[in-house]
Image (tube, rainbow, N blue to C red; front, top):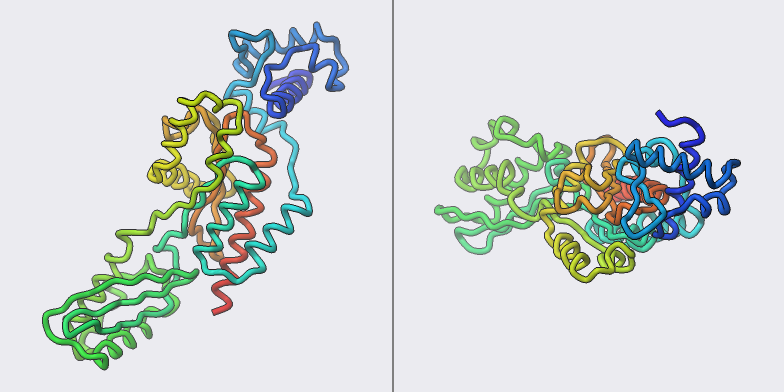
Length: 344
């Protein structure tokens, strides 16, 4: 545990480095921050912090910068709480909460807002299908042996699949199968739909083969695509950060960001934790992103976690604003999605 003077030095140095992206010297800290001690004393405290692993000294500079350990202590113990101002509150309310949009547009707008107001790359994972709530099934024949199944679930899922049968099927038979399934499944969490829940329905419909095909679709066939959709915004913001002015370094990071499976890994990690998660540098479970930090939070439908969102930037991140903005958008996206459900 750091004593009070070391805490103040580490906080001031980290704040300064976040703002300037320049290694920080003792004279600079003494001049800019009211630490109440001489530059020589600050220099000694910085040397101790370096020895303990909280700071390190770039080879080309007399100043010091925070290490991942220093950033972690700063985030957990020192950073000031950031609250959204009128501009951020107005933008989130106007563009996410107040406007009745389709779910996909709402989530995409949340990604754009995060990128714009943090100036980092933002990423939002679309809600997981298994966390949605079944609302309606429609069956429409394409011809005698092919039927389009349209599945609607809250908050705003609409999925289309084609099922095929051997025995010819009519619209009346489609309507009967859909009606029986709708009665049984309305309001059921999608992840809870299984064959046991559907037992007994097959004998009530006039086309058992169609029922079997649709039941297979509902229990296992809808989660095989479009369920890990990720929205990425603000990749060019990365290029404005001094850490990524090197072309090769920037190109490598942008290529990683475009690999959506990497982003899915990051947000899946976030989904396993409640509240806001801050992953700093070498803590990142994705090795390719260990020069970056990720701030993420889950969003919900009622009490159910259905997705995650976050921002990605250099370890020299404005953690206070990133944490505050990510949490604010996550809370209001949850509110907006619940409003979408209640509006049906």
